[in-house]
Image (cartoon, rainbow, N blue to C red):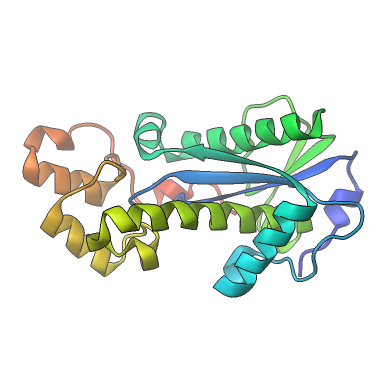
Length: 222
């Protein structure tokens, strides 16, 4: 379970940052930044991937109520412009900037899940598997995932063919089959190879430009 070892070694207030949505073929990449309260931190906070949907939703509500947080969202069209790595860095920066406005001051230190840091002026440390080590990062992982999942559910209501209610935009077989049958939507990431291939079937020139694969989406490790 994550703890507060890293937080206690830093100048407060300490923010934890994590993202959700590097790998999907559709939808935004979302980051969250969280400063937990000195007292009253919700029990059970863990890496979002280790929690059930019910427990994650419960903890998300508690974190939003008790902690100070910021959210950063970068949409699919900007992901295509920047590439997924820099889009993720931007989402993290937006999240910390939003958090700073709520705090009324800069964080004393920022703990970031992964092995890369955004280009910002905040004192920061990158922690590989940080969501399994830092309580603040784990809390951020919950907010980022819940925020992104909610966005994808809204899109699923408009585009039901792609099964986003269950796959949240990841390239599972149902999503890939729908992509071939119905073509891409405005929230698909054109720079990702399966989406580019679907565009190429409609407009051959649409395949021009750099493509990103699943491995490209994971050039830094959480």
